[in-house]
Length: 79
Image 1: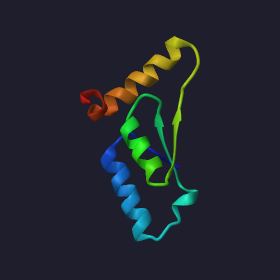
Image 2: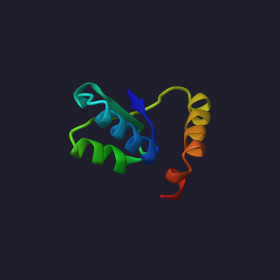
Image 3: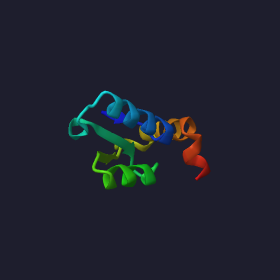
Image 4: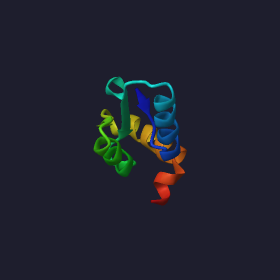
């Protein structure tokens, strides 16, 4: 499982998988629904396992999590 919204992190992970000759059929990439969709779509188009996840729960408990994810991923905020 590789969970990141960062394009560079995905590129590095794919490079490492290739260098190590890891069969990517057992590797999964995941991003939060609505964030970095362009990465998820590109991964899927290249044959990688990619999925979106949706946090759920009480709004007062979920919002701090979503805000942290957005703050940690400034590239998501700019695009």
